[in-house]
Amino acid sequence: MDSFFNYMNIFKLILKWKFHLLVLVIASVILSALFSSKLFIKPLYKSFAIVYPSNIFPYSDESETEQMLQLMNSSSIRDSVIHKFDLGAHWGLNKQDEHYVSNLLYLYGNRVNIRKTEFESVVVNILDTDPKIACDMVKAVLSYYDLKVKNLQKIKFHEVVLNYREILEKKRKSLDSIQTVIEGLTGTEVKTPMANMDPLLMKSFMDKMDNKVNKEREIKRMKPKAAVHDNEMVLLSSLAMSEALAYSELKLKYDQAMLNDNRNYTYTNLVVDPYVSDKQAFPKPWLIITFSVLAAFFLSLVVISFIENRKLKVNQAASIPNV
Image (cartoon, rainbow, N blue to C red; front, top):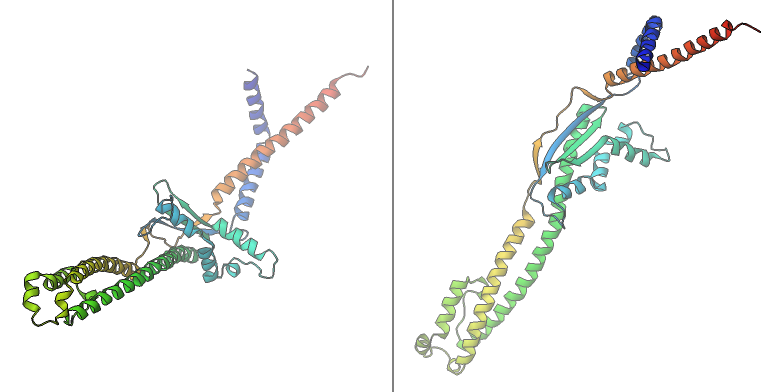
């Protein structure tokens, strides 16, 4: 019952002061609409893109999405975007201010938001006073991300290429040495370098060299010393085959490394393209007006209640007869 009477008292207060409250509400609507307009607050427009990672290799236990998130939030991409759009001047910051860098990074952190979604994609949200620049900034983040991943992978793939190239050169020299010895033992010049033979050609060549039947036939036209070195030929044959197979396997890996080193991939799968927004994202006038009207209304009720209670106490004091 007490709460009921309290509500009734509040309702009576509103009816009693309805004109004053109406004026305050109208004034709060007009003022809040004015102060939330472009005259006082520059509107911010949002552009965004949703992407999935592609053609990347995690460095540790992180997922591909987490790696993408780390790279997009890196200082190199941030600095590239700031430099490309001259954001300090665009956002009206003074370079002579001692806190210029701090203010610039603070605004960048507030207006550029890159986060992972629950679907393991990455969303790039950017707010700016110019909707076209906001859209271009999203595209720039994606472009710089592709370039950064490409450069990182290029460095690592090139290291692999150089490593395989060095090992292949050593294997080639080893095969050349074996070929020189065979030529010296048989007196036969090998027209095709062993390093250029595929395993089947190498096997065919060595079978011809150490096959006993063919050896008897060829020994007549080879130097006499070749017959003395049959055992050496068997060993050289086995060694040459082993080296040729190893060289062939390394060559395949080298070719794959060269393919990786020379590839020109993109590293994002774009799900939602960024676009130029035609509607401001901040501030939201209706939200400011609603909050202002409610705040003004309840504050007015508090003031009115205080005034009414004060009057009630004064009247009660005046009604008590003096003794």
